[in-house]
Amino acid sequence: MTQIERYIFRIALGAFLACLIGLTGTIWVTQALRELDLITAKGQTLLIFFLITGLSLPTLITVIAPVALFIAVVYALNKLNGDSELIVMSAAGMRPRRILRPFLSLGLAVSLAVAFLTIQVMPSSFQELRDVVTRVRGDFIANVVKEGQFTSLESGITFHFRERGPGGSLLGLFIQDKREPGKSVVYLAERGQAMEYGGQSYLALEKGSVHRQQKDSRDASIVTFERYTVDLAAFTPPDAELVYKPRERATTQLLFPDTSETYYKQQKGRFRAELHDRLSSWLYPLALTFIAFAALGDPRTTRQGRGLAVAGAVLAVVVVRIGGFAASSAAARSQGAVAAVYGVPLLAILISAIIIFNGAAVRDWNARVTRALTGVFGRLGRRPRLGVQ
Image 1 (cartoon, one colour):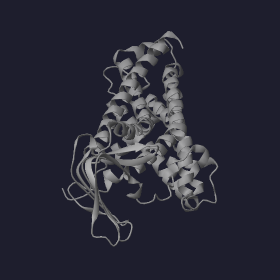
Image 2 (cartoon, helix red, strand yellow):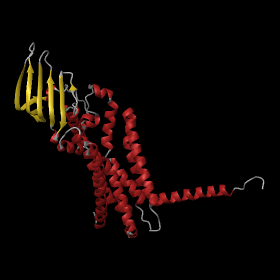
Image 3 (cartoon, one colour):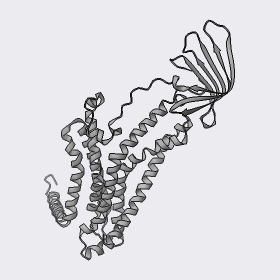
Image 4 (cartoon, helix red, strand yellow):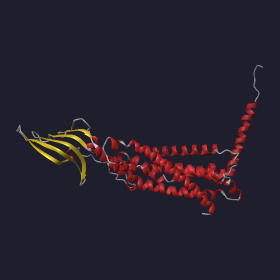
């Protein structure tokens, strides 16, 4: 890069990073606030909270990065034009392709990052998120029992605790185990704390007693304890088979799926759409870069407004994104629609490139069309009216 190209690249890069960090941080905070019940209601730790909310960051970045790049290119071009630097570059004989080069370099870097996140990182984060959420939902203490209520399980266990204490502890515990016919075991404890050891979940009881009543006996044996551990595996139902959705599977699994799998046979279209979505995602940062430069790359004086050009670029971006979503939805239903998944961003790049590199011809054709339409409507407006005067 030349010095002027590095100067333009720094402006665009700074604006891109500011937009990316700002937008991602704002949306992440709103998403994180929705998961606060993991701590307040379900008694999970801060580590689980940040793990679940952090696993959504790759998805947020891949969605926000093209938009942040578009905003950065628009900002950089407006700044260069406002400082009359675009006019000086054009007057010095600097061609549009040289001005485009630093923006295109930034667009390629963002495209590579989006491709890596989409193809490699996002499936792993989705899969890990599914595993963590499954473990949280399967947490007996967090999701099954309710404070101040007696909860009866089909296995013959009744569970109750008075209130939830600090750190997720349970106060005033009562557990009745009647899984074995004719035999009853009751656990009473002042305090209990869920814990994990060796991949298994346990409930550590403190300061309580165990009441055992044998079959055909009216007397119960009572054993007091300072600390007692109960295995929670008996309290939770057996896990159902975990089936990962297409977006949670590795890209190699989408390229070479197990065709004998029942879920694949039922959702073959979703597998196809997800695969081509990943492979085409890197085209959108380039498409949005070309759209922004096509709209604002020409130098203009301060008397010439750029608001209409910005509005046109925003409208073009909205159309491209809607077209991409529509193509992805169609690809899930039809194999022939796969071409449209790649065609939408490529068409946007092609049209924008024609405007950028043949701007004078396009503007001249647009001016002739505008004059012709103005003349036609002008003659229609001057046509004499017939009627009673």
